[in-house]
Image 1 (cartoon, rainbow over the protein chains, first blue to last red):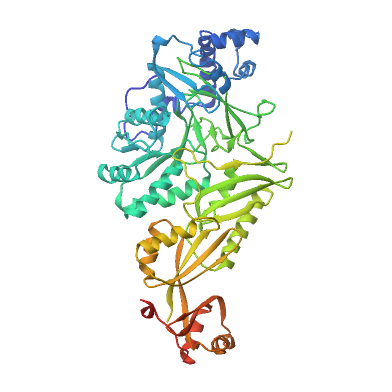
Image 2 (spheres, rainbow over the protein chains, first blue to last red; image 1 turned 45 degrees about the vertical axis):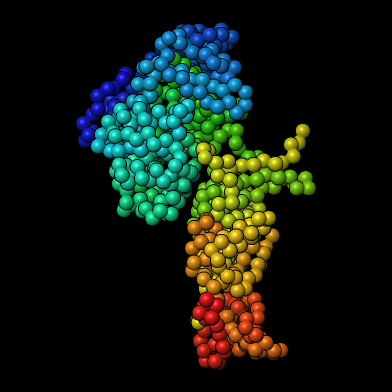
Length: 444
Length: 139
């Protein structure tokens, strides 16, 4: 499986054979690897017990559809088996451990063998090659390192491509910009809100990314963002920005990535089985319908996961692409099955609100949704920062507010309070931005 | 004929005004006149000062939403009827006032306003020989 050689730079594909498999070939390979993975999982005390409880044997998996017989794995399972109860290999075969912070209860632990690390690097390399990066590119990874897999994941992947790779890590924007100009950075990986921040600092110090840097590719991910925000980032930086999907439970970044068509993320089906299920009934939904993304690893040794519920909501866009890859195309994440706002019976995703706000050039990127209960009524207030004071005429400011309200009403079917606030007045977090504050009275 | 006025977008909450005033005071900017208009959620603080372009840069660099607005400052005698006469002249020529404030400056009254349409207002003031102040008068 591992690919240590780098293809000719004119080749479109990093792993030509795997990337250009037909649907039939993908499914044949998947069944073979699913059967091997299930068998391997019986080394894990957790999965052994799970299968026994479900009265299921590895031999019962004879078709791809049989995957539905396998119980789901959840983040709670990872917490309950903390730290090593999920492992399918002995610890002496493991060379790396990543752990996520435990916001509620135990943290989660993900173990890797040497082969897991190699395969992970290969997936990231495949993605970066796909969007045109080659060994003569300079890749600056402005992502957190340490336990956050966006650091080492992109580091190893970019090195695998053969690029000069700068582990710039997150923060210290002035230094980031200096690296870009001094080292001739052509590609940057960062969370989208940090790209916006970098551009603000560039403006302050008089750097124009189009003229003063060689930047041409951005990899953005780890933070939900709308298509509008991506286009805005592309416009402000004068580059192509590609959406990246990953999660530490699978390995990290690399699981899915956009090709140059920018029409959904190719999820690598030689590495994963992708299911989209209704988060309530857990039954599969049809292609095109939104549901929860469920992933099964096919090549992991240390900690394979079967039918892992990601809590990310998305949908299948298609299973073919003009780029020549038949690996399933998955829409950008529509939100989390657990961050959905239900207000007065209406389901709202913060990303819908963001999408609308981004359509107004007068508004800045930072916003905050606050839910309150006022006299038994639940209300939503959307505070959004003003980009520039474009007028000192109240009538025009009020018109902007009412235009935003109307556009939001069209999208989310109820009218929130919209409050313009000065730039810089909303809290900005270093990592993932906090977008929703729920102060509602909880009804019993 | 127009002079530059700072228009500053401020949130309706404690501490926002003092932040602006502190920045101006540290740069030794002298405020000639100022006024706040507010809505439920936010206000606009309008300031005439002795060095509007410097003040603008200072606020902008501090990340404050600020605009330099072109306003007209008419100079009138400090006696009953003179403000009415000046405004009537504008009104008779189809000019609206978007906002206005007034103060005393060296024993004369000053009417500061944004006019719509602005060009027509300037023309009318010239043709009717109304007296106005320029930035140099406040520098």
